[in-house]
Amino acid sequence: MKRNSTHQITISALLIAMGVIIPMVMPKIVIGPASFTLASHVPLFIAMFFSPSVAIAVALGTAFGFFINGLPFIIGLRALSHLVFAVVGSTYLQKHPEIVLEPKKFQVYNFILALIHAAFELLVVAIFLFGGQLQVDGNVFYFFFVLMGVGGIVHSMIDYNIAFFVVRSLNRGFAIPIFRKAKEEAA
Image 1 (tube, rainbow, N blue to C red):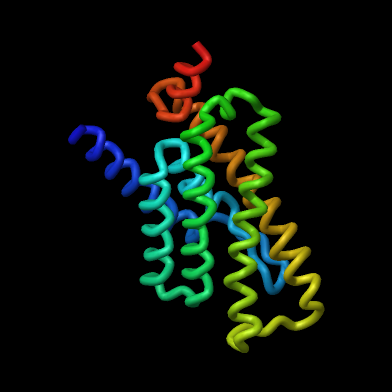
Image 2: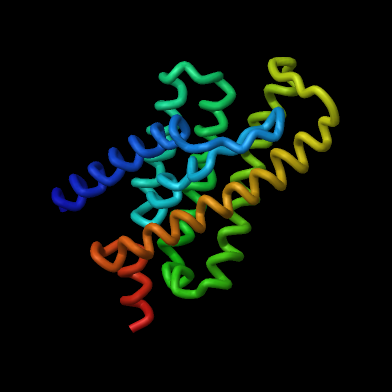
């Protein structure tokens, strides 16, 4: 049991580090006032293939990283909102690991998770907007529902597919818990 805890802490720490570094080095797509950083969610999505506790640690660790890096408070809170989809998604994967072996079902799961992801980020942005701490020039409907809503869903789905590709590839050499569990249940 102790080895498993050490292993999970090590995986969590590596994914947190990646989650803090990726937004600093990856290209951003800016469609003012929204911006989308390619692969910024990948470490958190990878964590979800290990366990809910790893996903929670990575969600909290990356949010903390944004808070201490001097980024605007809203960015840290948006990162903290990832805790919701991380818990929902990783818990679902634990209960239904076979979904990783079924591409169509995995994409439906990915879409539902992206809806949750975008909804909670929208909630954070709405609190700042309606609280007067954020201003949007132009059409607020366009900002919320097209940029933040649809854009957030697309961004989330792309990042989760990148994470899935990475984890599926890693699983060939290392036993990733969800894939191992899916194969055991399929046998």
